[in-house]
Length: 186
Image 1: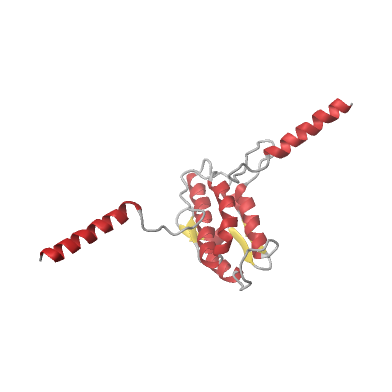
Image 2: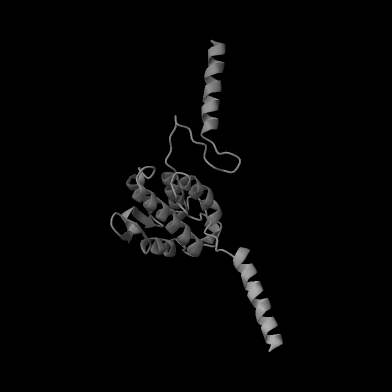
């Protein structure tokens, strides 16, 4: 009997470990306990809006401008770009954030649903980056987990603004050197 209990407790411990996160804070997929990463992301945003989980920033009413940004966002839709509110049921500090993720459940095989899901992540990333940038570090792991389930999605979950660098910076330096050289010649 004791041996049977030890085996059962060991299996429970293994099952719990399989639902945790890896070292890079990415969800480990467990087919025995499927989860929907878009639901997890939506629920997290909801908890931030309702201040169940505090976003590390001053209390300046960021929730209303965030929800206004969401209301004014557009995503891919069946025949045209449509309001993000097509998939967002609720966005407020009182009621939280409710997204109809069922509209995107076949994103693995339906390209249009994948575009809708990707645009949804982009809209949330954009609105957070402009209205509550302090929440981006909390958002990024959730967005990355959902991004992993969307084929060909090019969202930047950190919503970081690209900085000058790479080939364009080298080209700008070269243009500057040539301009100085031309001025000195003339």
